[in-house]
Image (tube, rainbow, N blue to C red):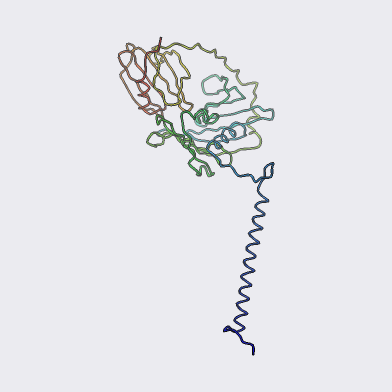
Length: 352
């Protein structure tokens, strides 16, 4: 007689069926995984030699370059507001267009009060403001609330500032990338910049003091990027815009003093001799800049000094006046008081 194991036949059959079902399920998982991998490999772009392209990590400077490209080469309309502590919010309208013939046109319009409008056609900027005859200047940019050096030439700021990616955020209802802009020697205020992820357009810019308190904010409220220029530009009669003023270059004036201390990356960009409007006194003047911040230094003999030493803040500007036995020095700029003092006390006699 044939012997059976300890398990009865029905139980053995059930075990076989369970085993087969598990085997079929495992096989289906393997087949699905293989097919998914094949589809992923087929959909991945390849370069000229057939190797899969590895996506490149987007760096801080990739984002800044995108910003530069979009503000120079796209058709857009941006509304933004400028806010400072203790002041009313100021609204602006900013447009840019590239016409079919390659002409670049730009408009910046102050929306409150009597208004001010700047119109750029290639390298000529025309200015229209109340109670002043329209005039034009030669310039390839419009100098507005957003720093032009940051918008168009951010690489020039590298000697003075460090640019640090912070990560994703949300501004004006749009995904954005945040970038911190920090003075390399902690002698100037810092900035926070948010760029639109979809286009690279600036959405928000904060200026912060050394303690991190907000000094100024520029916030985009609406953004539109289009394939064609805004109809506004078709209504501009370029022939009726004022001709650009011809400004003769002035010879470099020799001054009897030099500034020994300047924040890292800051350079002299202008010097002159000026007559003060309030007192009529003649002073020697130099302007220094790092691309984001301008600092003016005025020097006159101590014998002509008016008033005593003073230090005050007005909006973003620091005003510092110091007088010693030889000269009275005044420093004006969007810098901390300690930096203004370091500049003022570093004056020395110029080498003969």
